[in-house]
Image (cartoon, rainbow, N blue to C red; front, side, top):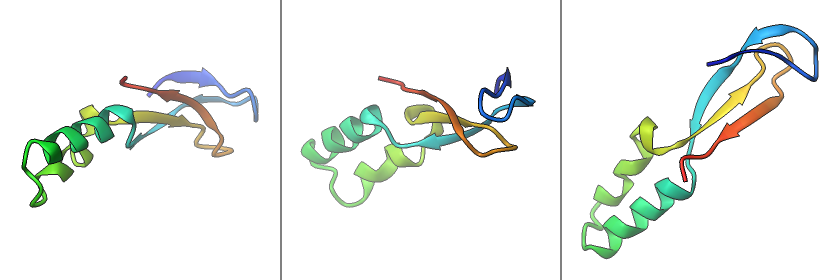
Length: 71
């Protein structure tokens, strides 16, 4: 979370962060699947927040302010 002035509603806010699947998550999932772990193990990257992109939104107006991409 970051303290920020929202450009949409002009309020001084602390952003709300949400992990969302990104390119790194999908690449890891595909790599694990190709390596032979196709019985559900390939879905592990979707459960680890540090492997996902992070969406920052305004808690007041709910606008997306920034998307931090891991890859």
